[in-house]
Amino acid sequence: MRPFPPAVLLTSAAALLSACADRSPTESGDRPSFGVSARVGLGAPSETIDFSSFGSSKDFEPDFFRLDGILFPPEQCGSSGCGTWFVQFIQGDAALVGGPVTATFARPISDLSVQVAPSLQGTARYVLNAFAESGALLATTSVTVTQDEGDPANSGFGYFTMSLTNLAGQAKSFVLDNVFVRSSFPQNVVIPFGVSSISYTHWGNQP
Image (cartoon, rainbow, N blue to C red; front, side):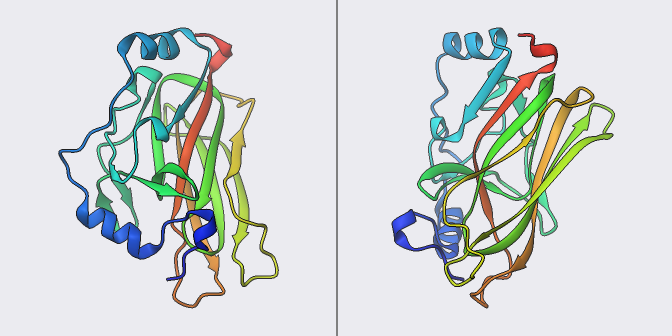
């Protein structure tokens, strides 16, 4: 599978597999002090979590950002089964490796934004869904992104933003996933991706 050029500091599929094989379950992130997290998580109407604060090339702790009001499932589950969450350096930034990427919020939110970048060259359709506490779909958005130096539709490398704003109801969870479209490199039949940060606003803009 063909990764991006080294200039964009993107991890190749081989590096991703190697990192998964070598990662140690005893490694953990250095959580910011409780005072800082409490101030951000409990007293601010808007939050942004950045996976660079956790570190890179190691297993992710699903409750690392609990004081910021967001929790990830114990395992990351997709069509190929379930496994441990992992944070990897993708396109110059530490990112939670997907997909899918899903999480729940301690308090309902009205706006959601995620920073996303693929880790292999190709085209994929990305879909972001927000759900009510009941599980009902509140809103969805999708975008088809081509980051492929061999494709005339190449949009250039880097992170892009997906957002859901002014939700009609109170969202308690989200799911971000993608569907492979094509690649100029025949070996690439899926396009893994990473999420470097997640921003959200509490319902009613209340802390």
